[in-house]
Length: 328
Image (cartoon, rainbow, N blue to C red; front, side, top):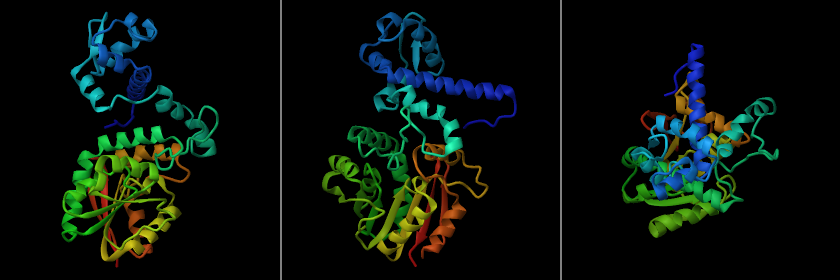
């Protein structure tokens, strides 16, 4: 949890956190975590980086709990080994993580998305770089790795609301983990997403899911479905885009069917929870119109598009909310 700022010391602590993340990103981008995972303890002179830079940044990472050493040789700590093995330390370069944030001043003046180093907008299709299949695959791997608990929570809350064997559309389901978790409960799940995402999901889950490849803002969604899950899609779209999407979803639902929106929604104060407040910044940097919406806004939008009033379930341990609405 990020503390509030009331003193200059608080600002100093926040700055140190940014410096720590920059050091982690720089080591990741330079392949230093990979080298330690492969070779064990190494001295600064044995690493493929400037020895002085290693000598200065390694203690930062040791302080953060990722390294252990005696000042002469360094190795991954147990936490560092575990995080590296899971893929969590494969962050890319410091520029990919922090370069766009350094250009936030320009975004504040001109609006998003953020310009890259060559002034090309850093726009993504809700996180997926369709023109770069390898980057898209890495992003899918990242989301899949982090979604295990979330998928179980979604299944826990959605399953009792549907009849056994019900037809579910996982709209924009990407890596397929949510759909697979629901399929294991006996539901007939169809995953709808971009071709690059469908290919990734097919490799993991094969014939356990049905697949539709396309653009969910334009192409036929299929159906009718007893339930539709939209996980982490709403935040990437503008208000009018979401209005159009919910109209399309309403048409694809059976009468009385259930819509579940999983996302990082703001509460009615619009200054919390923390996950939604800060995630909105990524939408400013990487989308044309996306942002984090409040529960109140989504309730109004659902009813405007012919869906029923929402039921809000907050899942604070996971940092997201579930909004249920029924087709009337």
